[in-house]
Image (cartoon, rainbow, N blue to C red; front, side, top):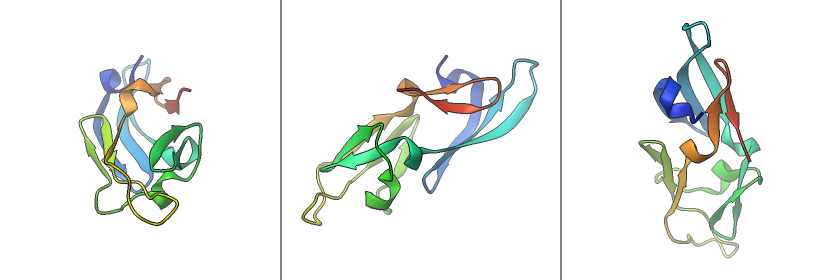
Length: 103
């Protein structure tokens, strides 16, 4: 199940997706998922399965719109590529109160 169906107060804190997520027993817990461990930058484009995306993103443009990360990523020459969009709902699920990245 996509995380948004069982999450509230989701937000980005640096490279981390943070959300209050519902457990099977109905209780709510905070969960954190470091996106740097699952997403990279491949020549200005999000790379699923890569690492370190946050360090290669423009911090001023890094934001969450609904469940979609929107940002500019650096190109190898140091300039920015086109604005990139990554819908976390396509990759992140809630497994009994733990946010999990699915490839």
